[in-house]
Amino acid sequence: MPQPRIEVVVAHRNNVPALTRLLTALRDQTEPCGVCVVDDASTDETPDVIPQAFPELRYERLDVNVGFSGANNHAVRTSDAEWVVLLNNDTVPEPNFVAALREAWEATGAAMVAATLRRPDGAIDSAGIEVDRSLVAFDLLHGHDYDPGAIARLEPLAPCAGAGAYRRAALMEAGGFDETMFAYLEDVELGIRLRMAGHRCAVAPGTFAWHEHSAFWGSGSSRKNERMGHSRGYIVWKYRRDLSAAERLRGHLIDAVVYSGQVAIDRNAGAVRGRAKSAAARAGQRPPDRHDGFALVPRASLSVNAALRRRLGRRVACAAA
Image 1 (tube, rainbow, N blue to C red):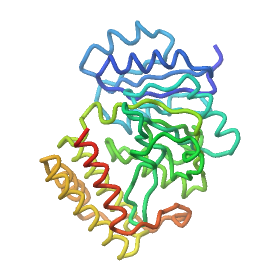
Image 2 (tube, rainbow, N blue to C red):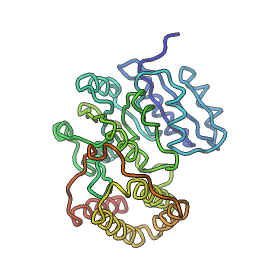
Image 3 (cartoon, one colour):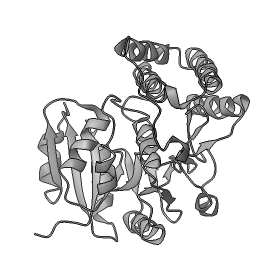
Image 4 (cartoon, rainbow, N blue to C red):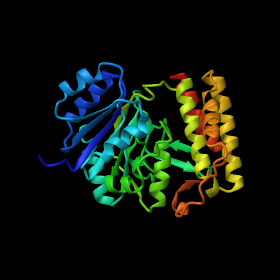
């Protein structure tokens, strides 16, 4: 049997109803594609239900919960496709989703394509990601009305890994996702490395996928905030020597205000705990030397106030939803 040129990869742990909705939508894609579900040691009925209900897909069962980064890396390493399209298990793509991403990479020659995620209320959840001078990350157009014209004008750092395409060879050459980051911000860090390697990120304004944001751990939960804090701390450590002292200080200030806001809004200090665990894990370790190609990484010029409005505004909106 010929191998698919495009394979959709879904890192999954529990939530059979959501995964069933996604896989049903993938059956309706106008572009032929393979589908791989990496079952990251689910504890629900996934192993009994999904392979039988969707026998056409490639089902990879992991015995140990390795996290989002590890599960996606497993799928990419074992794939024979030229392109991999990553989707969260709580998304539902439009029928032209894969076709629109293919058209974008063929038209631009980019090694990455950022797709758009829309919230249940219709607003944009993410149209790709960007970072500022301190490598603080943001979802482009988050909370804005869906507008293909505005999306077409974007130049993201990289896709959100919940809805994006990567040329598999470029992903493999970059080393895949950094598995030190169990979940969250792994797409940011990968995007930095792919940009340093000279790759670009295109957009696909003519399509989108619906997204139930943070369906697994819950938006603002202590566990999610801890993972976010851990990943943020790791990025700050890994690229410490690429940032100036002023840029590092600026990032610490933004993080401190955001974490304080989470204590007030989310009623937990998960991010602080994650940051502390990240620092403890690297105690005594020397950060990497300055990275060749870091100057190629696009970084938005935002004031501290603008960055805080975007970070805290998102959190307040999620808490009110």
